[in-house]
Image (tube, rainbow, N blue to C red; front, side, top):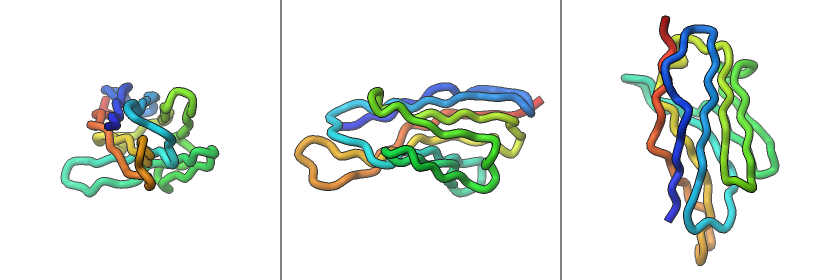
Amino acid sequence: QVQLVESGGGLVQPGGSLRLSCTASGSIVSINDMGWYRQAPGKQRELVATISDGGSTQYADNVTGRFTISRDNAKNTVYLQMNSLKPEDTAVYYCNAAVKVYFAVIYRDYWGQGTQVTVSS
């Protein structure tokens, strides 16, 4: 019913920048919170940043000041601008959205397939 498609990952040198995008499509009535999570090899998936439909944001301590999350509600799209990237930012980044579809009464979490970000010289 709902698909989240991420793009923008890749290989970047330390100190570089990348911008991730994630667009939701399908039988969408409304989207509440959207966010980015990441999972490095051998580690648990962790929160990177979230943004409410009203634009309120939340960041993990280790990305505050370097990453910026934003969204375009008209396009059902969330972005993650990542600056001053470090090797420890290397991970698969996943998009998440709380979506209400037609004929549903509650919001349900959906996930993208993930996009690899590698920070290395």
